[in-house]
Image 1 (cartoon, helix red, strand yellow):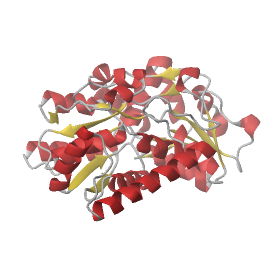
Image 2 (cartoon, helix red, strand yellow):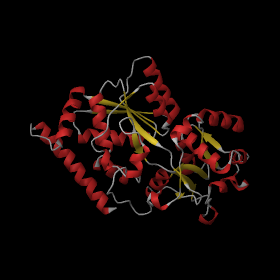
Image 3 (tube, helix red, strand yellow):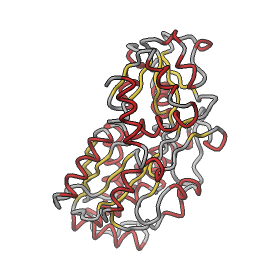
Image 4 (cartoon, helix red, strand yellow):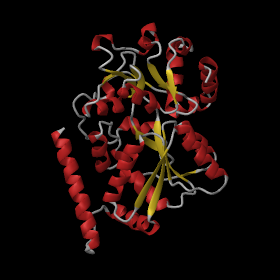
Length: 350
C-alpha cells in the first residue's frame, strides 16, 4: 500500500508540473499520439460523462484527476442509476440531440442495443493492449471496453452480526434469521442487479428469489442503497460490490465483506463513445485516461480492481483468478433481461 501511495503522490506532482509547464508555454510531457489528441480535446474544451457504474463521489474523483492530467479539458460526470442513465442516452439518440460524450454502464446489453442502432463511435484506444487479457476479451474492440471491475459479494454490519454468524454463501441469505435484514437492488433500475438476477437464476433457479422474497428484503433502486443501510445499521446484510465493502472497512465503518464460497458475481461493465458525441476528441482522450497508470492508481487507492497489467493489489483484495466468478454473457442477457425484470416484479410485488 505504501508503494501505491508513493506512486499516487508522484502522479499528483506530475499533474501539477504539467499544469505549470502549460502556463509557462513549455511542452507537456505526453506521448506524441496523446499530445495530438490532447490538443484536439483542448479545442473542444470539455467531456460529458454519463455514468452509472460508480458512486457519484468516485465519478467526481475521476473527473478531477482527468482535469489534473489534462488541464484545459473540463470533465462533467452525470451519475444516475443504470436504467435512468440509459433512458436518457436513448432519448437523446432518438431525438438526434446527443449531449453526452462517453457512456459507462454496468449493463453491457446497453452497448449491444446502441451498436445495433449505430449509436456508438468506433474507436480503439491506443492503450488497449495494456489491459488485463481477460478484461480486454470481455469487451468489443472499437465499440466498447470493460471499464469497471466491481464484483458482487455480501457485506454485513460488524456491530450487528458476529463473524461466525455472517452469511458465507448466496443461499445463506435465504435463512429465515435474515428476515427483514437483507438489502438488494431492483433489476428494473439497476443494470448490474439484472445481471446478478440472471446469474442466480442460472445457478439456483428462480426458486432462489421466491425464497428470498419470504425474507422480506429491502429493495433499493441502486445497488449502493442496501449497502448504505448496512453502514448505518438499518440492515444487517446486503448484496453489494466488494469494492464498496473494502473501502468502508478501510475508512473505519463497521462493515466486513464476504467473498461467497459459491462465487463472486462479476457484472460486465463497459464504456463507449456515443456516435454523435459533441466532443469526440475529448471523449477519446477520456477513454485513454481510463486505461492509464494514473487511473489505475486511483482505483487502487479506492480499493477497486485495476484494468491494466502490472499493478499490485493491496492486502485483503484477492486476485480475481483466485476466486470463482459468476458471469453472464451480455448477448444472451440482452434477450433475457426484460423477462427477468417482469419476473422480479411479479415475485416481489414491486
